[in-house]
Structure formats: C-alpha cells, structure tokens
Figure (cartoon, rainbow, N blue to C red):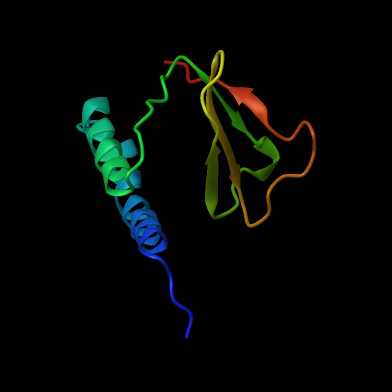
Amino acid sequence: MPTCSNREAVLGLYSITMRNQLPKMTTDPAISYEQVEKVQRSYCEELDQQYVAARPDLKVGFALETRGRIPINGLRHPPEGDTTGWYLWCGEEFPSGDDSFLPYIRTT
C-alpha cells in the first residue's frame, strides 16, 4: 500500500480545507481581506512555508481559454516586478502554449 510523507498529508489536508473554506471566504461580503489573510498565514505556518502576500495591485497570469473547467490550479513563482508570481489555470492539463497565460490585474 502506498504511503505519503507528512508534507504530502499536510498538503492534502490544506487542499481539502481550502476547497471547503475559500468559496465562502471569497463570496461573503462580511469576511474581510484581513480575515482571509489570517487563514492564509495559518496555512503557511502549518506547511512551514514563508507567507508572501499577493498584493491586489499586482498582476497574475491566467489561462483564459481554460475558464470553466475543474479543478482550479495555481502555481506560484517568486514575485517579480509588477507580478504576484501566480499562474492560474483550470482543468486537468497544464496549458502548453507560449501565450497561454494572460496578465490579469484586479480592478475595484
């Protein structure tokens, strides 16, 4: 029977917990940015990782052609310049085109 490391188990728990909590956290107007950040910091501590905020004025890369598929995936590189380092796509397969990820910046 396969086994997993503690880190993999924690990552699995993180994934399940975030799937359960994040939709409510991002759609409930009564939940503040500070509350979301507190949860994010808590998960980083559990994973023994440094918390690096993704400032809302910085860009993320999003593979628009994958919109609507599941699951939602994210990969983060160190922030650089005017980007958060986040690349987001939907679906089982990683987008393969050189221009798959378009810059996106949140507007209010």
